[in-house]
Image (tube, rainbow, N blue to C red; front, side, top):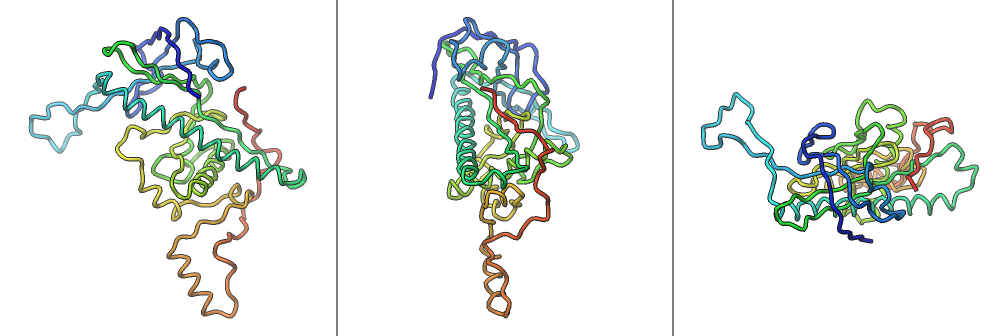
Amino acid sequence: MTNCFIVELFVDASSHIGSVRSFKTAHNASFKPPLPESDTIQQLNSSNIIAKRLFIHQRLNESKPQDLTQPPRVKRVRMKAADELPRMLDEANCLFWGVALMRLVYDFVDHKLGKMSNSFLDGWDVPRLRFVLSGLAIPLSDTDAVYLIEERIPDTFTKYMINSSLKPMPNLDSAAMYIAEFLCFAQHVQYLKSEQRVFLSDFQGMSSDLNEYEGNFGAGNLSNMLKRFELEHQCNEFCEFFDLDCLVVADQQSADSESDDTTNNPEPDSNRRSSSSRPAPSASGPAVWRPWS
């Protein structure tokens, strides 16, 4: 559902929140008057928001011969509002799809949990995550900037996965690793339920809220990662607990088939995984992370 309001947006463009990212800067922001009270947009009011704006890298002294011994000199350049809008719409649409794809995961999870007995669920806590609420601030004037508005993340920011890998970031603490493993499982669900068409990557945020995934403004959509998913995804205890089929690439299936034909004791069905040697999370593990109401 889309809500549209005419408000005055105040952005402190003179200071940045955190370090400057690859393609966007983040700034303190506020609305006047405040947005109407509602459960869906209350978190986007006043002190709870930040404003993000796109920039592009422009190489300096492009007319001069490049000194290969020195890194290229670049500066951040803002785009015209007419050029910014399509790029920011792309970012907003990615967040929209992110919400839908995480909902797909939780629909699957809740359906599975509903069929399990309480004794079977003992010791299992499912992280409850969501994407931050967001909106697009489109100026009435063609000369003003386009901003992506997001609710502020007040907690410690954690990078769970990068967009060029299907594995959790190394050196995460136990609570963050538990979330990262669940997100790897979420990718598996999205990949299967979309018939191998899509999954989310580059997860980052706090213990209950996920922020944007970097690279939305980059060329392409990392389709090479989609092609490599079945080769590189590693099933974990979540995949096994929720009975997801193990991903087996064509070459491995062929090798397994040849092996079955030449032995009197064939291996178990190659489409089923073996049990994991890793213990299931205990009841004393991380608490359930729940979204804000």
